[in-house]
Image (cartoon, rainbow, N blue to C red; front, top):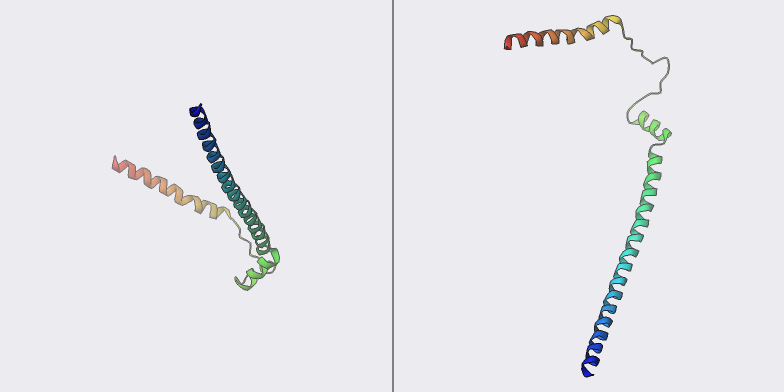
Length: 113
């Protein structure tokens, strides 16, 4: 009988210590979860703020103002527009170096072999 009481007392102490340990770990996890949630809210607020700043930086009026002031750009008007034309002669001149390169490489291959 004494052994049974001793075993039951030992089981009671073990289970109570286990319960205290589980409660302690639960509190630690809850505080870590709370910190993570507050950090997530902070990051979301920063993200929203940065999105607003990004939209403000990319506003068309601001971009145009920076282009005029810092890059000395002007608005396009028909008076200052330059049109580039592509003629047939330019097309044949553009193809000519490619043909010469192929002929040279073929000639070089003939000598190497």
